[in-house]
Image (cartoon, rainbow, N blue to C red; front, side, top):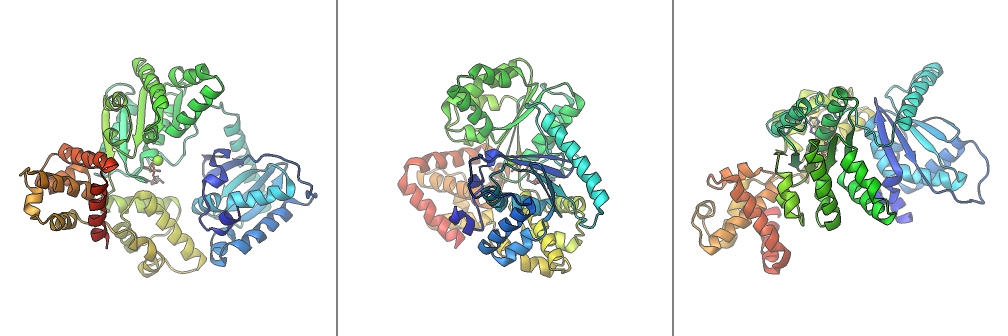
Length: 494
Ligand code: ADP
Ligand code: MG
């Protein structure tokens, strides 16, 4: 544990995320941390605030003063009652960061002193100057809201209130997925069943899935809309076998849902028995005309060790991909997020971010919040210079290569011309070089299959897809090929 303490990047798993259930309503996050109770002989009754301060003191010794100032100082201890501590933070970024990196450590420390399970209430409010009365009223509202969550039936899914269609910016990179999601909400279980959405991390898959869930729940309040991550399905299935409660498990997923939304289905890859279970879950729901929506970070056929029969079922309805958004979409997202967080974002700073943050929307959002938090802490204006200075390291690690460059390097390595590489001649050596170039371009250029096809002499996207799959499967057992690809990649990234 002391290693974890010393590290600024404390592992999430260490905090036992399972025990940390986070639900959110109207900007208020309620977290419940369950810690095992065991006797602690050192326990002496003191105000909880005293232990809170002790915990912070101990944290101060272990993290840099810069990080302490940035993340811990803005937290305000609002009070405690029974087994609940209430804390105020000025924005969700600080809350999320603290929750992920420092919160488990603080709580562990308090537990060490008090031997008591505390429930936590986060109050996210920028204004620190409310009167005691306002605070009491707000707290009451929050407690009411919290009670509402806790007393709702266990199986009712809590959706993130911000993840709605209204808050989702549509552009060429995601319009198919968004349109399909909206169509499902109009006519569930008809045309697009199942809907399979795939795309890289942080591009809005979970956002869309929640939007579908919330919209359907609103339209059909009596429906049972079930959202879950595939890991939950896997874990619950294993648990059900262990405790011989498989009938309950089947009821829960085959009979109960009117709509099943499964996030990150790629984790089923390699889990044979769970796949078998999911196969039957899928069939039962599908036969009963229930809508199924799944997301993954890959196209079904790219998911490793996914049974063919599941793969084919995933393609029965519609497959929609989400790509990295273009500049205009990124700008629109930034402006919308800034607006929602009440951040004054000058357009030239937004342009700078949109142009330079190329990986995904989550990163874009993170950079915006980091900038605004730092600017307000340092009392500096949010300018392009400030952004450049603050995000130097993030931006330099974001190099995206051009497809042209990858083609040139692969051609050079195999001593062939780029025209041949992009052409249609199919000698064994050319074909292999082409497949490798397509594989590397897909991996390093953040381009879609159709885009890659176009850049490889106007080929169909399925050609690129099968080239990538071919190389991926060869890579599993051909050490020579792994070496070749490593060498080319080294050259490309040098
Ligand atoms: P994924 O599930 O694909 O990894 P998320 O759905 O978690 O990504 O999205 C990451 C963040 O980016 C979320 O805060 C989400 O609201 C935001 N986001 C992604 N795409 C959009 C978009 N088109 N419009 C608005 N916000 C978006
Ligand atoms: Mg997600």
